[in-house]
Image 1 (cartoon, rainbow, N blue to C red):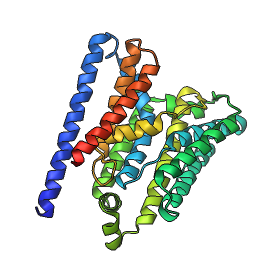
Image 2: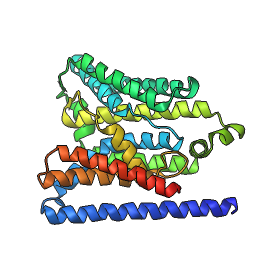
Image 3: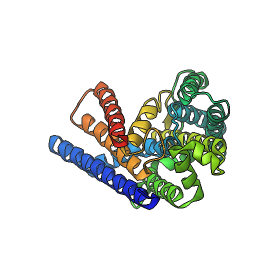
Image 4: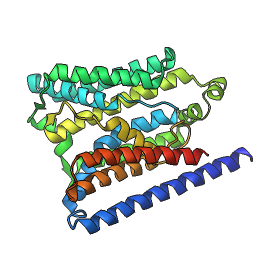
Length: 317
């Protein structure tokens, strides 16, 4: 099979996978709308959109890291830590725009450390990011003394509570970011490098791509996006929670893989990841609407992750 035929076949499989996942999403919506008459209410649909807006932003970065053949388990801790730091500093000193930039810089710096450890020190990504996850879980409680940090300043709440044409701003931000990163991955040299590294890192290195530098950069990108997600969540809630982001690592990986991104790298696109995020959001909302206890959500998330990895294995076979 020549390169063009292989590429066409891969593109067809991506489309088929996205259609399958879209049908699953539609099926879940139909089921929950039958079980609860309020599921399709505009308020609940906006609530679902707001819920997936944060994890969806994190999932963009996680998807890109997965496409290079790695993953990051520290995303939730980074989101929670940066949210706490920005909320604490804004409450004490004001100057929210400056604190926002500072929080994003912290996320990028954490990503830089992850990237250096994985790419340069050759430490396994699982061990590296698991260690960083634990470190910043502790750091979050250290900064906040174990308490949520409430902030009622208008500029702090702007990103999370503003509406444009009656649509919550976080949902608009989510859609715009997916459009931007889709175009970047599909039509830029950066996107081609990401897929090349995930497909065959040694071949990418021999073709002149600086694999280590690219891996460091995608971890930095994920750190920045995780930080922004945590800050956006704190802005929406009006407070930064110490446990914010605890489910983000598995949810972001599960949504990405469920959406067709190969856990071994090199295959998939972020629109599929967005469908995966939507499936998780609809499932969570649906369980709440039919009065299922919260611990069922944990069970459902675990099942989704297992199914996602199973489907990825079948796709690769």
